[in-house]
Length: 291
Image 1: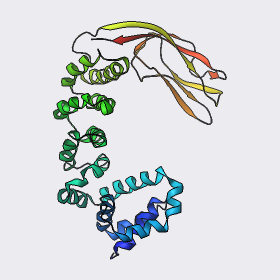
Image 2 (image 1 turned 30 degrees about the horizontal axis):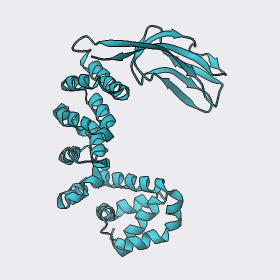
Image 3 (image 1 turned 180 degrees about the vertical axis):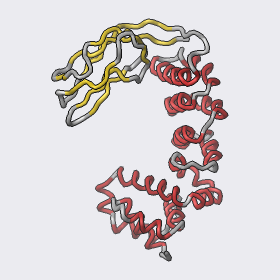
Image 4 (image 1 turned 30 degrees about the vertical axis):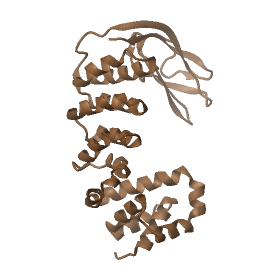
C-alpha cells in the first residue's frame, strides 16, 4: 500500500490514542511504518508528525503515561512484523540503539545480541533495558558482563535477577561475596543464589546461615472473605519471594510471600478454609545466608 508520511503519522497517533485498528493500516503500509516510527523516536519526523500530534493532543494528555506505553508497544509489534527494517535502521544510525532495547526483549533474532552487549556497557536506563533483554538473549557467556553490572547501584537489583534466571554457576562466587553487604542487597544475592543452585541441583558447598527472629505472616485483604487455595507445609524451607499462602475470592486472587529465607515453623490455616478476618497464617523461623 502506498501511503504518505503524513498518513502514517496519523495512524501512529491514532494507535497511541487507543485505536487498535490503526495497527492494521500500519502493517498494510509495510516496513515504511516502522521506519517512520523510528524517525519519531529520533526526532526526525518533521512537521507532519507534529501536525498528527496536534490533532489528538487532548486525547494524548488524557492518556498520560499510557500513551507512551502504547508507543513502545506499537514499536514492538512493528519490529516483529518487519525485523529487517529495525536492524537496518540501527545499523545505519547506532544512536537508535537505546530506543530499541526494550523492543529486543520480544524478538527471537540473533542480531539483537550485539546491541544488548553494548547496552550493558552503557550507563543509566540503557543498561537496565539491556539487562532485561539478556534474560531472553543472554547465555552463560555473559555472566561476567552481568556480574560487572552489580557495581551499578541503580540497576543492581535487575542484575541479580538476571543472574538468577541465567543460572550459570560461575556467578556463585561473586554472589557469595555480596552476602556480606547490607540486608536488602544480601537478600537479593541470596535469591539469585537459590535460583542458580536449584538449576544446577544444589549448592556447590554447604551454605552458612545466621538464625534470625521468628516472623508471623498475616493473611489479610480489603476484600475478605477469601478461601485458602494453597499453603506452605510445616518444616518447608523457603527463600525470599516464595509463596506461603494463596487466597482467592470471587473478586481477586492474591499471594502472601516470604520476605526472607527460613523454615516454616507453624501453619495456622488450611487449604479450603475461608478467612473472614485478618489472621496469622504462617509462622516462619527466619534465617539469613552469610556464606
